[in-house]
Every structure is written in C-alpha cells, then in structure tokens.
Length: 271
Ligand SMILES: [Zn+2]
Image (cartoon, rainbow, N blue to C red; front, side):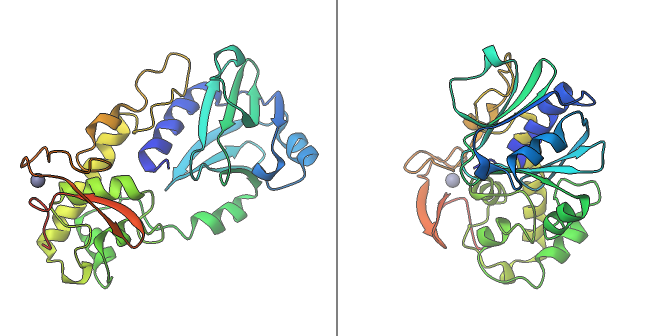
C-alpha cells in the first residue's frame, strides 16, 4: 500500500506535468471508482484546470480552478501513471483524465477512488487526520505532546492516521528499527529521550524515502527510473530470516494486532 513517501513522489512528478492545463477528456472505465454519476463527473471536470496538488497523509487533493477538489486515495494496489497513451504500461485503467497530450491514468483501483468533492467535503475527510511529522511546524515538543497520553503498542500508534498521518505498515517497522524501539514497545512507558529518538527517526526515514521516490518501483512517467529507489533501503520490513544490517543478528517476523511486523530482537528494545 502506498504510504506518505509514495504519495509525495506522485505529487511531485504529476505536478510538473499537468498544472494549469485545461482538462480535455475524461474516461471512466469503472464507475465504482468515482462518487457521482459518470456523465456529471465528466462534464464537471472538462475544461477545468488543476491549480495545485496537495498531499495530506496518504491522500492527494487536486485543487481545481473552479473551487472543486478531486480527492484521490489509492488504498491497496492503486497506481498512477502520467504521460501519453503509447507509453502506458499494459494495465487496465479505471479513470483517465487528459490534459491535452498528457493523460493521468489511475490503475489498480479496487478500494481506491477518485472523488469529485467540494472544498468543505474534503476538509471533513482531511480534518480527521493527525499532523504530518515532516511538516515545518512540527518539532520535538509537539511530537512529545502527540505521544504523551497515548497507550498501546508503538506500531499501532504510528499507523493510526488520526494521530500521525501518512505512515503505514512498512514505514512503521523501518521507523521503529531506526529508533531502536520494539514495534510492541508500550507507548505509555516511553521516556522522553526515547520519544525524541522516535521523532528524529520518523522524520529521517520518511524524508529519505521521499527523496528516493518511495518503494513502489512502477514508473510514474515514461523516463522515470528514480521512483521506487527506496525499495532496497528497507532494513527490516519483509526481511524475515535475513541478517540485520546493524548487528548481523536475524530479523524476526511477528503478527502485531494482525499486522505483519518485522524487527531485530537484538537492536530494538522497550526504551
Ligand atoms: Zn540488529
């Protein structure tokens, strides 16, 4: 599932290609992927322009010049490609939005969606999300306040979108490894020093993953060889039985609140 770094990578690559260009064509191949009647969806989008693409958590929010918004969530397995039809990978598309010669293709949308909404409706969805750790306004003190008063396993806290937005199963394990904390560490018992380490690690893992184009290595544009470079950087996620890059011990896999969880029992602790 795409998490914050993957969505941020999409935002950057898409913005370059479609901003301020009028929408010339819309194709809906799967009506379940949109939220209103197909004809209305298409006619409302035609001739509008995207003036800004915002990312919040795992959402992309396309601001249209008529004040409407396109809210995109890829859920499990959704992908975006931007470019010309002849460059499109051999995949079924659910929604296609053309900006002259360039088309935005949405693929793999099963639970994922492209919803046309008002600014207010979008605010109702995004308003539920917790803050972004990579946001300029975030700092150690604010992060400490977010964690303080919470209870339960560290990983469960990290993937809770209402507490902190954008982190999913994969990056939560990488962040816990980087912070040298067990995914099962009890949040209520963490010392301020451990919470500070968690804050620094969260910022660092997410920022590095964004710069590396995330872990999903399906190209977003025709000549894109950068997207997915973080795939080889995972230290513990999906590395059960492999050597820990830090200590040479063996990476372990467990189920934590029914989520696949990977960690190094030597490097990671309760504090
Ligand atoms: Zn280790």
